[in-house]
Length: 387
Image (cartoon, rainbow, N blue to C red; front, side, top):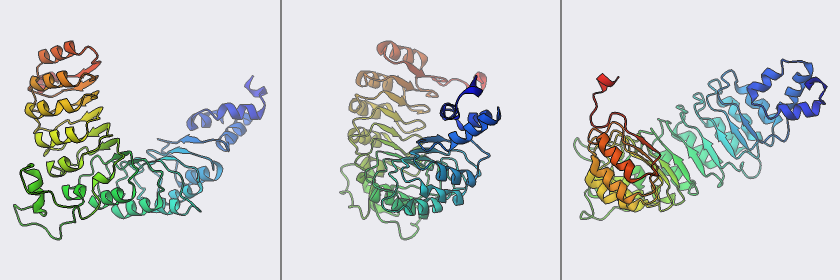
């Protein structure tokens, strides 16, 4: 029956299929082949997902840019053969709003910046850009990209771009102030002085001393000397932030986090795997970010019941909370959360040796709206026997 359909109708039907299914359909017959080819060239197509099509290389991106001029959303995740040369084709997509190139490990960003900057007139109205896991990305490429991007950018994901430093962060804070989502997980070279907008240390400090002595004052509490004035852009300039991910930025400490995490509109925050985060930093974050709905603090081993006793009351909107592998927490923290965070729906306390299953059951009985509690290996379970 499908053979009797007009080519235009068959093309329209195939245009709704993923690219992989269109390729399969093209093998059915000559009519289906032509319909599949037409579907690929459908001029009105605005969204295309080529993620995981590992056989695609630079030529595919060139074909896309020539045949789909009205694309608004393009996903190219895990295209391992895509290189900088292919990125030059993106300059032809003048209406592109969302670009996902995560895990394109051969892309360094240089040609992408040139392509976006070569658009005649205003740059594309790009609102979302993901270059997560692009391990070749360097500070210089980020500088070029920032200059090429327009003021419409709201979401930037640079997670696991491990070579990036404070220079990239300060450039972001200077030129991308409208950002609402910033993901920098596993950017391990970020340091306190970068978040604070301080100048880069001119030389390596002597053993046992800090490159910025003023950071010692910041970490020692309100009774210490007044905070130094920023010499450059700090994270505080991103006033519109609603989501921030600093997971595994392991060189960050209370010295910066307590000062810059002051975002009244922030809803999602991840500070997991920050070994230097203490109760003092937790309380400061709670006061500075009172609108949090999702919070991840897994593997923060210095957090204690005392810190949560002070912080919990600042987060009445909290719905998702991850405290897995926080080794000092006990059921007292569950009591603090249960009394203050009445909207909590998901809680992860897995691998918390100080919290028992009995305490978890009491917590869930007090808050029936909690739909998920991750509690594997609580109470110091013997993992060798369990596994």
